[in-house]
Length: 498
Image (cartoon, rainbow, N blue to C red; front, side, top):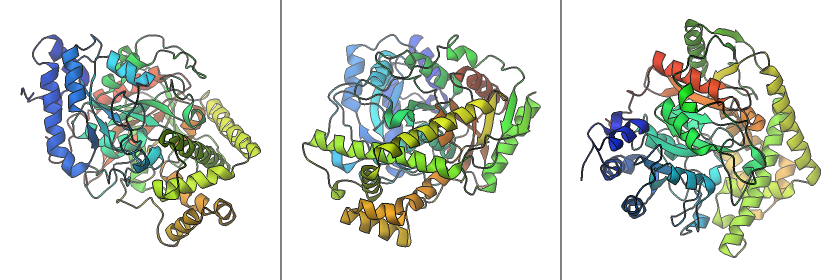
């Protein structure tokens, strides 16, 4: 086994360079990645399916000469099925299920030359902002093992932060790339709606709220990976505007003088930790020092209406997921098959009337128009990524009377009662508060990124978010490259991960 000693200090493109110069082989990189997983994963629980035979067979068959030839890749066990490998979506209901074929994004990952060797931990069906599924167990933040790694791409965030891999795939329907990037201290970009593929099984997941991409150590890896995966998909119902040139070229291009809106209050309401505000203000000061114009301003969003609409869409989608999983299994699911919060959302989704679904979509589209209008006056919006520091395990799930009430409603299958007492709405606020500056950009379909610029005095990472205009990942990558050069983060590794 050829262990690559410098592996933790390499990004994916640096690994490709070594492979092309024959200084290391794809097998050397795979062996090193597996060794890091074996050493670190028992403590952190980031990787839930180890696919070593699949990876070695791919190398033996000959890898495509793509931009990531030989790079070990971990795939989130939700956002992209890989044919012939386990797929559970974080749910015990799908234990033992194997994907029959590749999704389009998985096909593109393999065509890029990556070596898929494992699946990462995620909450059940990606529904929570923390990764603590019953199916897999708690994913632990590498900077503080008693705290959350975020969700739903929590396992991916851990894997990249600890350099098990330089990049791992994720999906973002309400902050699920940006949130884990923030709490794990890595870079994460959510592309424009329609930039990356969803099919062929489904299109426009969560009614277009979800975009799929990756969490990475370096900005250039994110850009090059998007270059490799961003071609329009046949039959897609939403297609992003074409890029002007490769995104990887934007990373080294100076952005020019930009006008940036600083919004430190959560965009859809709720409290915020002062440390998160401090991180955003520090980033604003850095942007000013780099020659940009920063002004405190924010789009005006009706928080209550937005959150109700978002919850209506998600609950309806979960009801459909529960139905579809039942079709896969050949039987109807019951509350015993899934977690309490999942079944509660399923019950709520069954209660949604047609006109309520249409009204919810219209509300989110109105938010898109509001944010779009706001961005005619600014090039970017800068916010704290999350409203809290990495939370203790279990902190953002229902507690006490709320938890008991939710369980009682679930076991009685009393969806109508849930509507009457507003149980789901109250529990949803806990989650929505955490991601209240993330979800508007899912609704609007805009590109947004979390950049690891800030750590607390006791060593917890706190990301800051930049969001741009529809189709304008280029400006985000230019700014991210500028920030990476001004305040590098690649040398920051969690304790015990050197």
